[in-house]
View 1 (tube, helix red, strand yellow):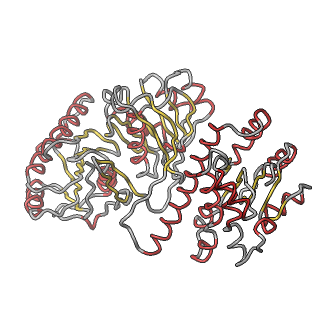
View 2 (view 1 turned 180 degrees about the horizontal axis):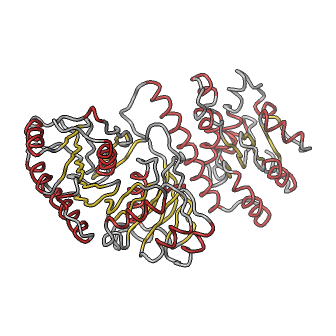
View 3 (view 1 turned 180 degrees about the vertical axis):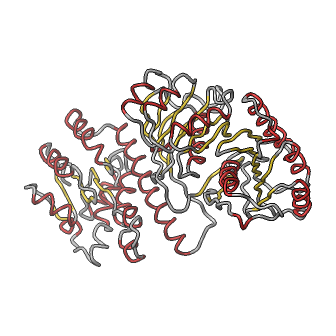
Length: 520
């Protein structure tokens, strides 16, 4: 048996492969290669052994079968420390292979194409590649397995220094190879199971984005993992322009704020605390939206998170700067705005992709011993006049506020009530055990805000939104006492008629959307 070190190359991603193979040749290694990889290396002037010379068998079936052979896998799996293995290999004319440099057919990129066919997908399922990676990874104590071009430099450095890769590196590369093949098989299984209509298994793949200082509380450890798929309104792909590292609670709150921003096309601003909006408003521009959102609840926004769907300019930056905020998120910041805000070294500024997309993605919630999966609640019906179920009909201004209230209350913890006037929240009641309790909180908050402005709530013709239906007329009765003139709710209670009757008695306009938005 030869004592030369031999490396087998078969790569789809050819980044850096010529230089890597050249350096191995300079270090005395023999290079074996397949198909396109062999051609590329030969064109670079390297001496390359065709895989068919090793197996004594040609590539067949359009290249589907070329490395599935004992002279390949025997050379990879044979143990150097067992005389019996060495004797069997020698008896069968099999030489050791000391390194495998393989990365796989681009299955993920293929199925991402909008016009991909099943035939295209199938032809991009690699068989020989994963088999070689797994064989080499199993025999990691003797074989170096390389599936990531990022490792080429380290491997060459170790061979130059030690004559071969270190055992510690080979173990790490083995783990990386098994991870690579596991991810690859998971993608294929997910694609094929979807095509076959099977759903009793769930495969998830996330990469570590960052370790966090702690979790929800200081005694809890935490990490932030991100999906490989890039999606809008996501912190996973946000660019942090200033401030200290995000915490677990920052990420939770910021995600909730981005889901609210997604609802609006007009200039919009939301302040958020503990995953509930404390002030939200649409405006003529970002400055107007911020002013209205801030005035909605100047107390609660302290230490909160702000998200806007327009570029942050110098004017709005100067208005935000005096307020203690944890995070400001926007699709962009002007250089002048950054100059103003970056003077606050702890203020986190996040540039977030806020481009709209059709449809949503799955939402995952962990529980003890399991996981819940549901579609994201992306769809929101626009509130229209034909949803009215009362004698009193909405005017145009009320419809605008009703639609605004409906989009905000959707993102408030159930039971949820919001009170709105002129495209801004005046009161938010969140997460109470009954809807009347939430209504009381929201209405009293709105009353206090209007009183501070020298106004009587009963003269303001407010709009109220509820995330759930009214099983009793008590919420409508309370709303009437505070001067509410229009209500939007999903409807659907067996006792809807009681609330409609009470609304008619009180001269209140009521609209039922036919869609519920509970947020537990």
